[in-house]
Amino acid sequence: MSAPPFTIRIVSSLAEIPAADWNACAADETGSVDPFLDHAFFLSLEESGSAVRATGWLGHHLVLEDAAGVIQGVMPCYLKSHSRGEYVFDQGWAEAYEQAGGRYYPKLQVSVPFTPATGRRLLVRAGMDQHLARTALAQGAAQVALQRGVSSLHVTFCMKDEWDLLGAAGYLQRADTQFHFENAGYADFDAFLAALSSRKRKVIRRERREALDGRGITIRRLTGAELTEAAWDAFFAFYTDTGSRKWGRPYLTRAFFSLIGERMADRILLIMAERDGRYIAGAINFIGRDVLYGRHWGCIEEHSFLHFEVCYYQAIEHAIETGLQRVEAGAQGEHKLARGYRPVETHSAHFITDRGLRRAVADYLVRERGYVASAIDELAAMAPFRKAEVESE
Image 1 (cartoon, rainbow, N blue to C red):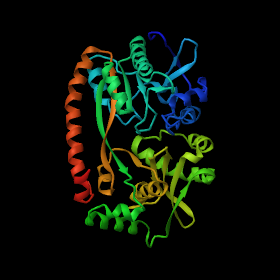
Image 2: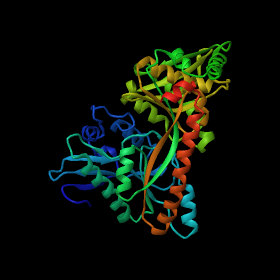
Image 3: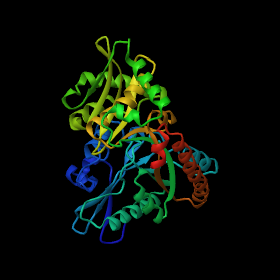
Image 4: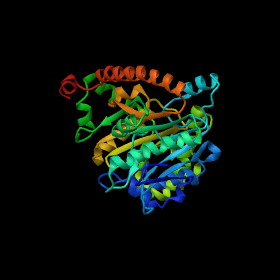
């Protein structure tokens, strides 16, 4: 499917790819593997029944091999029958295309299921010509879309350099906004607060105080061997409550949490709120080389500001204490801005096979990218940091 020296084949399950080969391709320049790119994470999604054919996520992973049959690159890809669990919204494109008589689904989705975290998507083994191999993956994926007769191929939450490469390969470029905390070498949480304006500093202190004081609530951070099945049972109840209200049904099964607890315990941080001897709320975070990724939150008791404490302030505090450089708190949420998270641009790339749909989407994306850039500038100006610090950046 691609020009020599590579060939591309497609597999339907991560179990068909040796973990050592996958992770060798997924490793960054330091040899570290992002938790969401780890073979164990994808395999747990499949084996738990979370990202499988029955849920609309049929594995269609691309494997790039050299002339000797050695795996030199991979691309996590799914044949999808819907647009749920992606956090880059194309339902409007689907509706317009189908009203015009087209068939939008199935489509191909290059992503980490249910995970709006930026990371590499064109995964190439160290020592390879990165540009050549990644271009082969980009072109090969487009050829697969054409040969399968699907409407489109979507590469979501990719790195900026991948976005540029995909754009050069004919993919349409899309941008969006998230909010991240950047650790400026703060000694502790108070040092972080000192960088904020006086008014915002007081608000955060009040929110933290009111979330816990007088309510008998204790915050516990669990990782490694502390991630017991009892802790997962409690967290899954929180996650199910939130997922049912947001999506109608939760994306992840209970088995998924047990599997990642077995395989990735040291890369997971559960921040749990306990009252009267039982857990009442919690948030799951994944620990990267220099990033803490906040993912899911839920509760069985409502308490003012407890969501901010568990999801945002505890995450910031943990990042500062452990020397992590950034906290990514998931998709959307302008309310994060007032709590020390800054707006950043995220990227996705889209290969549209139908010429008419491609023209319409391309025109829309030009306007959308302009809006996103302006919105980020406006939001950055509203950041709660003291004016002297903002001007010096």
